[in-house]
Length: 376
Image (tube, rainbow, N blue to C red; front, side, top):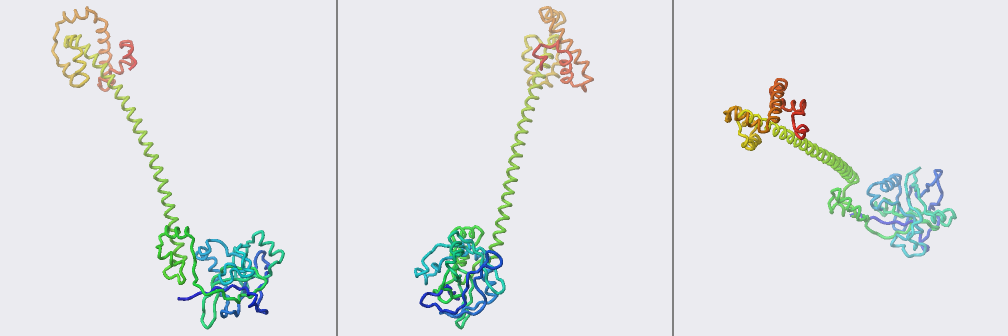
């Protein structure tokens, strides 16, 4: 298993070597960019740091990668006074202030040199403007190449110093290259479908079994697509729910209308039945004392009772019918005769439908009906 070394490129007071390359803080022609390192071989106590153009490109690519961003919790690389984040130097003179005076927002390779673009805090800007510190000191992890050579792989932090040894002299300590992920990123990765073993592997030294950046992005894209589809389905469900509510209301309205029609038809039938009973009494087929019974029969089975009345024998002689008319039914009988006459005349106009003919008569001759019946 490879072990990575952490190089903090500031010389301790007792081990400072004059004459090494000094990375002075000077801005490039492009505003806001500063040179951090260049290609070459640079000796230090722990071995030889080998920096090639490929090395610088890999450092930039690592900084911009999703895994690199997760490793630093989507923040930039911090800029300290000295290297208070280096366990080997922490607490020593010039390495006690843990406040970040700036954050690296971007990296790029230009003319075989590594350039950084910091975002300074107000205090950090004053330090640079007033030239309190003249040099940058890079702190990075490096891979062993063998024969005492190391190649930087990932920028950890930058120190402001007046005692530079670029790319670094003091070997902080030998340690594993680990990356602590914040809990929210672990939760996100779990939601994307990665196992606990894969998430733990991301924090390990070798990262064996860890998901690649491409796999993480693919899972994220699939998760977003599924979320969008779920949103669409929820919208469709809301539309269907609204349509169902509309259909239910339409059904309720139709049922109300049907009930109204049924009520009107029942009222029509009752009026028709009373007319037929009055006609039956006039013709001597129905005794006046049985009028209620016949109305009930019409209510229970109208068509059957119509047939029954038509074939019923005459029970009262003409003299008896005349006597009944003389007893107070003369006016009602005449109206009944007129209604029957007009309804018979309307039958051909109503396709021989007695109910329609009767309704037509009631509309055309409301004076033959009681006030209540004429309104029906």
